[in-house]
Every structure is written in structure tokens, then in C-alpha cells.
Image (cartoon, rainbow, N blue to C red):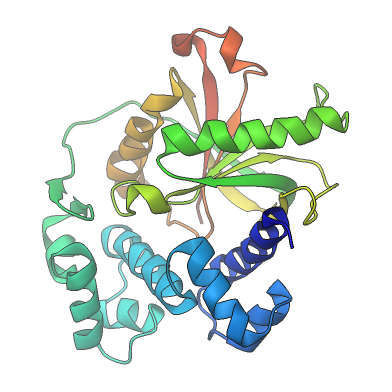
Length: 282
């Protein structure tokens, strides 16, 4: 079996877990999705992802809990239950092991946390006036890469564009969309996930090494970032640290995404790049 087929099968499982974080893990079902026996599935998943399915889901839930602590009014007990813990004490222990601080400390001090440090949310204000838009489901074909966003994004786009141009799928109507799956302040650099996507429905199979994904429809706050892609995290910081707490909106539990307005960024000066950032809100 080729590595491309293995990557595609495990990618389907990863996507399934990401989309069902609040459901119980059924390893038998995951093995069926991957088309492997349960015995072989465990070993293959660990080899490809670097952690077990249980550790993978646990890490994503703990990282999601940070957003709940900073941006929601849920009690610590409720957040613990949402993360799959029977009591707050177990949640506190796992949280402290992952982030080296207590969840109550994060909420009380309103700090952002990383895997190795704590840093205060920057103070000040920024003039950000998003457009609130209601979107339909967006069907995508995607290529995934892992690593820092500076490393992963070019790799994912290179793979996706090779497929798109070789199959004559590109035209001026196709949207260039990126889904940064993880917060670099929370996730270790080699585990950060990035999806490069086109809004077309074709060709996602084991042979292509690509996968299909649907961005859920609903309400989004649309921001315009002007400038280099490497500065996108500063804009996200302003959105989550300043705009969101002062707005009337709550985050929905679906990923944010980016739409790149420049067809060929290689021919555009970094300061002239334009990126729309879509934040799911209610």
C-alpha cells in the first residue's frame, strides 16, 4: 500500500474526530473509516499522527477549553464536562499538565497561554469594523500539512495547486481558502495543522492525497487583513483580544477560515496582499 493511501485514510479519521469532538470515541468505527483492523489501526494512527486517538482528542479538547475560558461565561465545571471529564479536579489536573497553569488562573488573569509560557493579553485598542455576513455551506477540496504556518502553508498549497492545474480545475471563480486549525500559542509547532482549500467538489481520493471538507454555513464576522501573511497572527490577536470581548457576539464552535484575494501572491508585494478572515459568531 502506498504512503499516499495511508495518509489519506488516516486524514479521514482525523477529520472525523475534529468534527465529532463532543461525541464518544468509537475506535471500531474509526478503524472502519480507515479501512483497517482495530489492531493495525492503532499502530498506524500513532505512527502518522504522533499520538494515540485518545491523546489526540484529549489535546484538541483541552486547547478548545482555553477559548471557552477566555471567551465564554461557562463555569469551570461545565467546561470540564465539555472536555469529557467527570469532575473539575480531573480537568484541572490535565489542564495544568498540558499548560503548566490552572484553568482558573487563565480566566482570572485573562492571559493567553502557550505550551511553555504565560503571557498577558496586550492592552490598547484597534479600529476593526468587520462585516457580519451569513454564508451557505462551502464545499472544499483540501490539502493538509503540519508544522508552523510559515512551513505548512506553502507545502499544502504546492500539493493542492499541482493537482488543480494538472486537472485544469483553476479559473477566476475558484476561491482560495485556508483553514488554520490550531492556535500557535497553544499547539506545539510540529502539531499545528493547516488546510489549503479550493471551493470545488472533485477528485478527493486516496490517490490524490487530498480530502473533502465542508465549512458549515452560518453567521461570520468578516475582517480584512492587509499586508504580509506572516502578520496574520497579529490580526487574529487583535480580533480575539480586543474586538470579540467588546462585541455582542459569541464564538460558534467551528473553525475560522481565510480567503486569499490575490491570485498569485508570488507576484504581489507582501504589503499589498489582502486576506479576508472569517470568524464564526452567533
